[in-house]
Image (cartoon, rainbow, N blue to C red):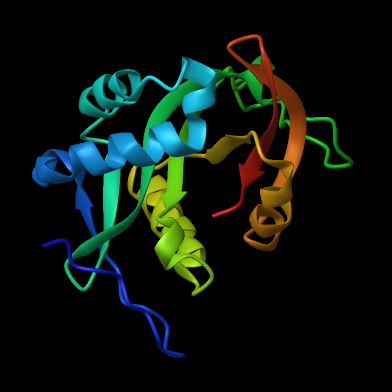
Length: 183
């Protein structure tokens, strides 16, 4: 019998995070979540997400509440060239003459952020983003970035220290907004 999620509390929920590689029994659930959220980009192919999550299992974390999986996130280390990190902003990059020019930056790429529909609207998203920021710090990343396909989420990410830095495209078909998060 599948345990139902009941979250009737005004207290901040206590989440525990486990690497997917340590709880592979939740791989099917994670693949189903990914298909439900982003399946339209891959012909609703759950196997596509299953394989991708399996390959990324060291970087994917399952959020557990009271022993139940309620969400996930992935933080993937990527090195970006300086050209990929240039932003149009009012901030000026100050370069000291004695400092060698920076050509690469360590980026923590946030992906697969998902919260089970039955567990939404109780503050889990903020906890998941804080976990992502902690993971970025642990990997000594200099920046954290993510792409959103749903611009209605941008307000949330902005409240968490994010800002849109450019527009992108996923698979050359789906417009995205690339965001940076402070951590």
